[in-house]
Length: 159
Ligand SMILES: [Zn+2]
Image (cartoon, rainbow, N blue to C red; front, side, top):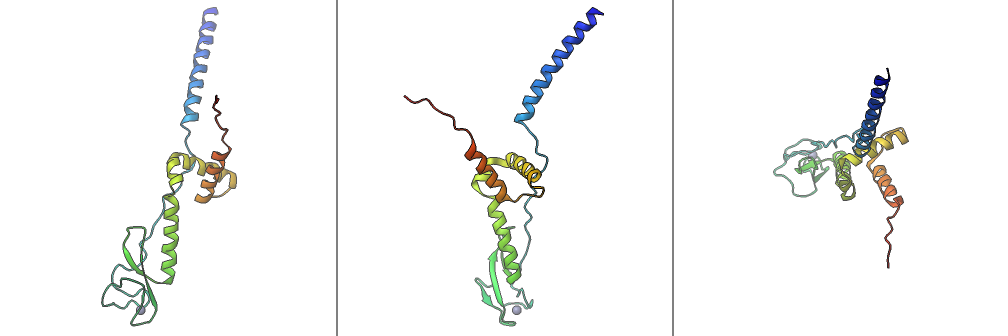
């Protein structure tokens, strides 16, 4: 009787120390609940010399924005982020590609890249809980900046 209770106490102590080390591991290697989705980029636009309005074949691929010789509409020449292809787009498609470029550049923000995917996903999960909706990348960045600014400064004794 005495013997088994001592053993149980020892086991309990051992289990306790395991929990302590698990908790330490968990805090330094916390898993995000949600993951920022991959950025979806489209293959919007004509890579062939075809008018994006009337679909008529053009003599050659225009190098810059011009008017279609058939329908007279303005053909916009731009690069798309998906594959950097030069494409011919109409007004609507140009807006779509501009939005994609904006989102693409936002993802490439050096400050966010420095934080890394893991920290971004943690922040994304945390903000989602806080806001009750998917946070924007701007909000994630603002939250990081806010945390960086309120971090207690490590003081150095000088002199
Ligand atoms: Zn046309």
